[in-house]
Length: 376
Image (cartoon, one colour):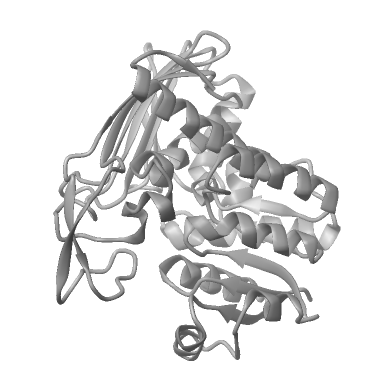
């Protein structure tokens, strides 16, 4: 069986590790931000090897797949090296720091012949797959309007800190690049079409923050001494969308909305019916009608269409959440790795999908700068 290695030992790296263990995929080792940090985290996570460098990881002949969960600025050079070494790669989003870098990775992945996936895991909540099946079958009719948000509160105060606040590490866009791209990817996946134009407004409500002098893990509280630093990345955004068939869209992003822990909401209005979903209630899909009662579909493989049932892992009434979406994603990716090609029914995001999200972000930045509609 193909063994995996994971780059990054923080919050999301541990999520990857847990999903791989559930699948029975052997995890050969991890690469941390430094040798001591890697060894400390490997011991805490129960992983046998802590590599001292990417070169050492790629020199290990037992490693066939590399998971990239490092900070954003490291994705492009690390993925380039992984593909050059002939390994399959599963990369956290964003795929790169710029659209030029992501376009290069698309070309390298295609030339490599390896499986190259981007972790847009929210696609793999089963009811999102069910919704995609509803759109595909025409159950919603012609799509008219797509609205929603992705709101969090973990960066809502001046003492909240994370490396994503730094443009040189996380990218020029933060709320849009970090979580807004999840919304854009998910809705594009469900609709089977992508937006073509955007009109965007960005806001930074906390232009000065208190950065801890020591390390802080994602979603962890800062402690100890701090220093004031200017922040230019967006705390929130409002974005209008145009789609190629005439549909319209609107969504907001925020990492400063008190009480919203991880709320991704989409609402799709079609000419026959509507549907809506909230990530904080992931086992329920609202379905709306004009001339019949509205209903709530509780996730149950026996009641879902083929796309939704294929993504479900537990019986109805047994809630599937965030970690389960990675399990479902990796289950499909590793099936394709074993087969040596992407299957026709695969729903995981490709490097081309990751490249689109980089171009989406470029258009958002350009639109916010000019105050005008901008083509993607």
